[in-house]
Length: 260
Image 1 (cartoon, rainbow, N blue to C red):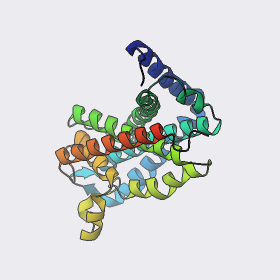
Image 2 (image 1 turned 45 degrees about the vertical axis):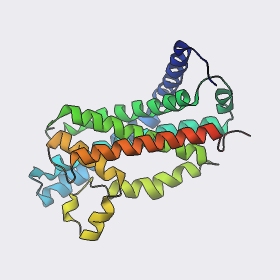
Image 3 (image 1 turned 90 degrees about the vertical axis):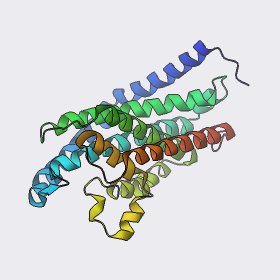
Image 4 (image 1 turned 90 degrees about the horizontal axis):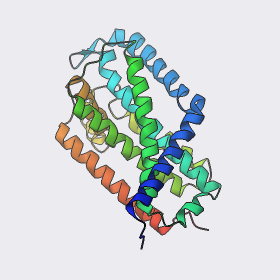
């Protein structure tokens, strides 16, 4: 159906990505500063104040243990927020219809928005990593695993934000998922504790939480410790990525909530 030459597709992809990056850089006071303040408060309150009372966890100081989880939390939140707010805004303003009727393939449109979200997520992750250096030393057990996990996690939640934006009918709808689903998943995903501390039932519940695998695989890349087999965590990440990408592409092809 789409017969655009490859160079035209690449041009369309780069245009969407650049538009998304310019968007969050233009309003950097809203997109980059708040996460820095939030992550700093987590470091001070949970790391310094509470951490000094907890002591060690899995052989590391509490501050060292929670740093990977806090970085991942920042990446997840900002990857998700960038795509859901951007795509829904264009959907609300009906400007997305111009893109949908163009000859640009749906997978190019989807990929452009996702990479825009990934860019913001990774930027915030880098800022959070730099901030952590003011509070504790940062280990790096395996840099390849660390980078791969943070990239895949950012893609998963950028796709999640895209799907949320497609289903949303009003601005309130784009806050429901982060408030009632994303936040509980983050706090129950092992950011602040080892899953070994949980009772058997809640340990089992954690195993159906995608963030549990992301946080632990990322923690393994930095500290070398994990509550789950890292290979299995990667398989779960691949499954989440492929499933969400295909589902988002299906919704985009159907024009679910997009064409009027």
